[in-house]
Length: 323
Ligand SMILES: [Zn+2]
Image 1 (tube, rainbow, N blue to C red):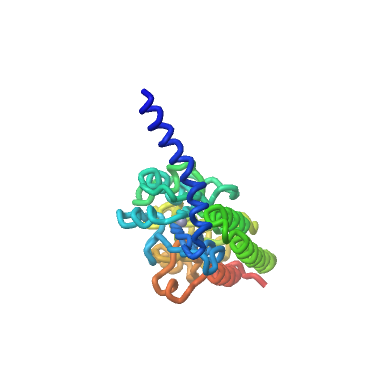
Image 2 (image 1 turned 120 degrees about the horizontal axis):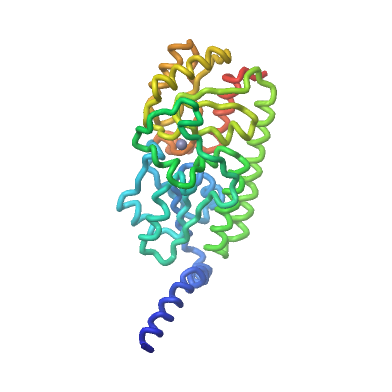
């Protein structure tokens, strides 16, 4: 009985110690860099900016991979277990994250849901499109299973700033010796995100059109809502599914009725749906990059979240016929 009690106490002490002892240990070894694994590109880029050269940040998604259908492999789990910080977007984006972390044997690992404190929108489902699309598609469950929120929180730049704060706080807690540097880096990067928000606000203020159509999945709901735009996509949730013929016909009709001359495609997916809409309407195809992930090329070239968003703004201004 007493031995069981002691054993329990021991387990509790070890559990309690995990966070606190880790910090003390790290503060004594300032040369040991914080190891951070981030699931998606925005988190990776935000974390890189917060880290400067004081931490080692890696991207979990292999470059070029479609983010919603990603499932971690055993090697990924090992990588996460060796990290100090694991950053994921939210339960709707990475429904596997919470389960995975429970199974990871790593006492120093701190797990951060970067949607904490962010403004969340409800997921768009097929019915809201008014076409009751078939529920096919491999990635179907990903947006829907977990509380029905739209996972693309990073495409609202106010949310992006909140995410940077959350990431910086986690860095500071895990590596208090570098706290001031992390917070200063975060403040500098948040100023860039605020300037981006200003460019969007100004750039989208005087446009002939207030609606844009997208041949991909419903990724830009946050962005549209932030800048008072209407937005339709061929697919609700599954980046790798196909829209119903009825949905496609509806989009073609809407393009013509609204006098839109641009239809958008997205990164890392088959552009066939967008091409069909373009063929039927004579519209030009431009890309809106959702920044979930990047190609190997872009990663090698040092592409940034801000670059993608500025290119998106340029393309949006063409499609919305802004002055
Ligand atoms: Zn998406």
